[in-house]
Length: 232
Length: 205
Image (cartoon, rainbow over all chains, first blue to last red; front, side, top):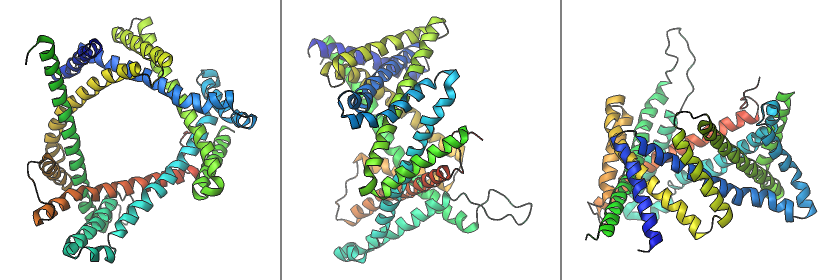
């Protein structure tokens, strides 16, 4: 272990103890570690934004780009300036232009991503499970493949029924306005089981990794202390 | 005037970007251009956000408010990071060492704290929610997945037990697929409502 590794190791050990001290309740050490972490992360984000966004997307085209590229940079430069100026109370209304631009672009990206990135691929995958040629390719597993496909279809319809937020026409004033149609209510119950199963699996995954992280930290601390004091 | 200007910009940029998705060959330069501008604006918004964070802590120190001691550390670490990042570049080994040797211990220890909190919260699920299809599915799945993923029980992939275990391990994908499709439908509806001006994200009337 060289001097630099040792120094970083001790800093890591101190920070580990400071954060894990939260187990005995919110305290001075934990708050200090979190402020150091926030300061470092904010500084790192600023450096990354400058190096990976501001420099290549703004400064480089303006400084070394062709006249055409520079002309195209007038609009984003104006949007950036309006966004900065709008931070002053007196000019706050000017912020509506860059913010509206951002809303328009991000809305379109959300729609495009939802349709082309999620809906079409996910629905295709469900439909492909009912492909008879895939069942024929593994005859010994046909039963499992059919069961898999049916469970997938029923489960997805159930989950989507659980997300059904429409409500039936109120015929009587005493009708429960939040109640969904009986058909969707029933399917929604099946959906709830599948959502629970998914969340449970996600929980198991997160719990395993966080537990590994805790074990890793404790083992790191023990190794470093043994190394420092010559233990075995 | 403000309302009309905002509506025009949202519809024009939204429809042009959407057209870029649909007619990729003809309009991909427009899509790329708008995306680049949006990335730049988001970056600048991020810098402004960091500026606000720093301003708040500087004011806390200047006015000697409660917690100013922590703010001093935050400002010092922030300045050290920015100065070393700008002078050395984010690719520098020293800079990476500095970031990772603080980030990894803090994040890993925070995950350790999360592990304890998760265990405690999961035990409270039934007490708060009661025995619903959701809580039954959640607890049984968490337990089965922890056992299956621990590697304590081994199955031959071709055996019946192995196929059943594989089938059980694939079950969470069903719900995940449903949730993904639900989220995409929700995003699609909200997006269309914004583009058709049925919703006003800027909140002006």
